[in-house]
Length: 245
Length: 140
Image (cartoon, rainbow over all chains, first blue to last red; front, side, top):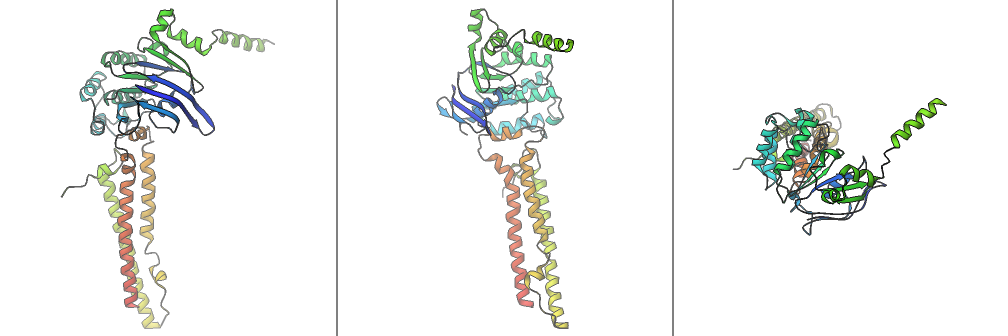
């Protein structure tokens, strides 16, 4: 169980996260949604200890330290691989450093996405870089896989394949926390939706609960965010009205 | 005797052996450059004997002898900074390094070779300085 209690993160004077409480259990597929600058990336980096923060992050009641950090993996749109290393060299590095590295999964995913194992990561296409990033995160042997906009820049086929593969290979104990703007694409993949806005958790619902209410994920997001569907038409009306005067 | 795996002492993807060799060559070049002090000491002695010129101080005799080491130390400082910035080039590989179960691996890989280079070259510089001091005292 990953427990986040009263998490607060600052960038200088700006409070990027404020008193975030979140509990994520094994096997959950959590979608983390929010506008740009809402705090999704900051939350993930704070969980991983990549940013200084207040509050507490525990994993099965133990604080996150070097002893249990390997239970968390991270795939980011910024990419965290080594551009000068080939995928094969990454495999060796990860295998040497993460005791629960899953070689079989790595090879299967490399084959599936037809990634060239001996080409330097820096020379891969954007889609291939994203794939390598996610393959490494999935193969690390982590219980909690954090993905921050992992498919940014990938085409729709690429992304579609990934969700299918993810759904197929994840074990019951593996948890995914996925931050994305592509709400409709992940609707059938996530089991829980967490909404974040201005550094605070705005909504947290199971997809099954939404379904019971007859609401879809996009509906939940727009309602919770207070999005006004007619705001675009009103803006256009105002703009064209001003031009006419 | 176990061979040193230099690659484990440099950032992932950078050849540690090549880096170590460059530091070795730099140290050797700095030491050779400093040997100019020997000829300046003997010249000072000769000028004193032939023309009764005043003997310059040890500092003056050394002149630019330490320059090679100073350049080397500057290069090692640059190497240290570049070892860290390397992890920010075209990706955020520092995120991976900072997530490793081996707590100090990231910093060891950044600091090891520059520190080793600094220690060895500083020791050599100290030995050479003592040698030149001894020669200065003995000849002049």
